[in-house]
Image 1 (cartoon, protein in one colour):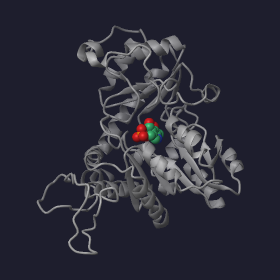
Image 2 (spheres, protein in one colour):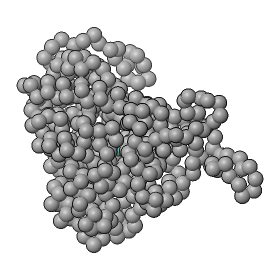
Image 3 (tube, protein in one colour):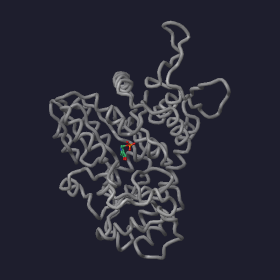
Image 4 (tube, helix red, strand yellow):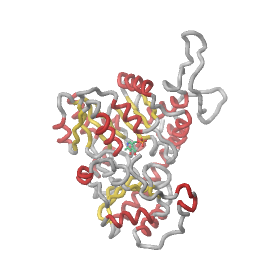
Length: 404
Ligand SMILES: Cc1ncc(COP(=O)(O)O)c(C=O)c1O
């Protein structure tokens, strides 16, 4: 079945007899048993719920996997994934990762006795493997530096050493990138982003293709309990119906915006894998069918970055990505605030770096907004200020904007 059709119709499951076109929200914590020792297939919603199950089957099919487990957020999925490992185990991890994942590894997994080595190049990944290594964890494209990692090449290393390859596929989604076909064993998603697509729901997923790994993860999930609620499952099912068209359109606008950014005097670097000048352009073309809708760029100085964040009108200065509303993020103060400064600066996450998630607004409006925010043209009609619209949401002086 074509990807577009699968997005709309999901898995084959029919969960009620009314003919409802939309999957019902089974808002039930528990399920009655037909008899002693009997089950309808559902016992308690922490273990499984029909709405969540439909979503899990759909995403497993979209990724080309055999199973998928839905969690309350991407971080809940990542935390459950780390329960696969024991004290003394070692993981090689890409050196550019979402800040929350970095924080999980640095503050929780390490405390639990798991060891990590960060690696940048394929050679470094290979060299970092020790007898204690159990897995390699990568994100591609990386957040926020938009580096592209050659998944097939990493999988040759993991296959050689008998390691798990775990890929965070949040940025491209299975619409553009299929990590299982390139050798991954587990795919992680923040479903909060493109899968949900509307900046209204948190969700996370672990997709698998191996019954043994899936069994372990299901046991962890039902025991630790970070499961996705029936209503949020419904919202992600609804989001996935338009995933393909959203990704196509958001990518189209991103390519235009990225090219436009390269022509602006105040912009000193543009990181978008779809630009032929991107160092990983060829890898990107080879391993993915698209470049996505995330652009990181640097401006000439920190003052310009801060001004731009305060002046945008159509684009919103907010953390997150992948939704219909375009968002601009300041990684230094938001997504990557918890990374020690020296390490952060070494990665290039400084006061001049901005990360743009291109949404579904017209590309001309987004370009116009960036142009006026860079001080190059007149601002468009202003949206009401937060404080006018909702006094309760007035900015708190000194309030933290760091990663939630
Ligand atoms: C690449 C990536 N992975 C994982 C996460 C964590 O997901 P969540 O915010 O749904 O917990 C994020 C969040 O921004 C992300 O960008």
